[in-house]
Length: 193
Image 1: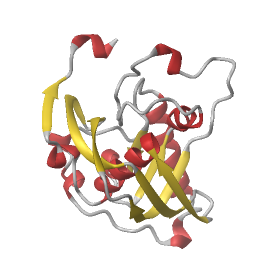
Image 2: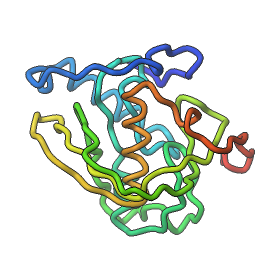
Image 3: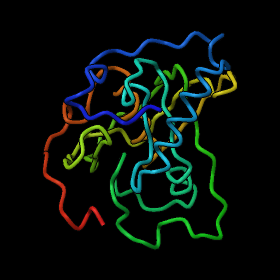
C-alpha cells in the first residue's frame, strides 16, 4: 500500500512526471494505484486531491475527491482553499442525506487554458503538513485528460475546482505551491480539529 510521502522524503515531488501509456490505463497495476490513491484521499479530513508523485509514482495522474466536487456543485463560496484546508463554515460540509459524488480521475492531463487574472488563494498540501500559503491562481481553467476507463474528456472549471486543477498540474511538473507562494505561515492548532 502506498502512503502520502512528505516533501523531505520524496524526491519524485521535484521531478516532471511521465505520461502513462494509454494502453496501460485499464491495467490492474493502474487500477490498483488509483484505488490506493482514492483510499488515501478518503482518510484525509480536509484533503481534496492527490497526485501520483505525492505517493512516490512519477506518473501524470491525479484524483479529485468527490467531496471537493460536491462543494463546487453546491456553489459554495470559494475560500481559495486547496488540498487540506479546513472548511470555513461547517454548513458547507456535505449533509449526510446528500449522496456522495464519485472521485474524478485525471490521467495525462493537459492544461488547455486559464483565465488571465490571478487571485490570491489560501493553499496547503498533503505533502507539506503544518504549513499554509497564499498563492496567485487563475479563476478559470480547462483541462483535457483520460479517465480511469481510458475515455478522453475536457473539463472547464472556475473557482475552487480551477484552483485544484492548477495545484495538481503543478505537482506533475515538479512544482510545489511553496515555490509560488507570496506568503507562508504555520498551521494554527484550531485548524487541526
